[in-house]
Length: 110
Image 1 (cartoon, rainbow, N blue to C red):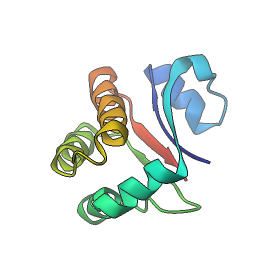
Image 2: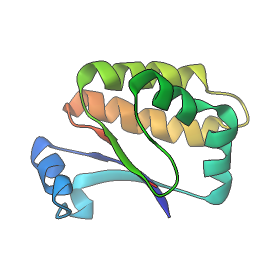
Image 3: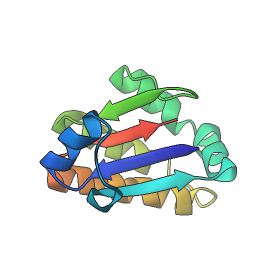
Image 4: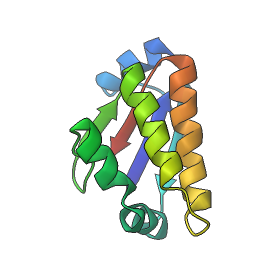
């Protein structure tokens, strides 16, 4: 199962770091195989990895939590938005926007 989530508060972010964050304090997207395939096909994960020095890939957990990286990630997501992946990408863009607003982070559990 591939999950992308955003803690709703700074406290939730701390709890997530020690795997004790309740679901009620997270906004999450659980990707289907098709949705994950759309992300791979779009090149968005590779672009984030290359630009930010991250490793968002199978069997990896990754976090983006500083303001500059979240802002750059939002730009990358918007640049890779297409008609074919708009539903999936829009969900992730919403999570990223929420992370910026709440000053938390975007977490990838793949």
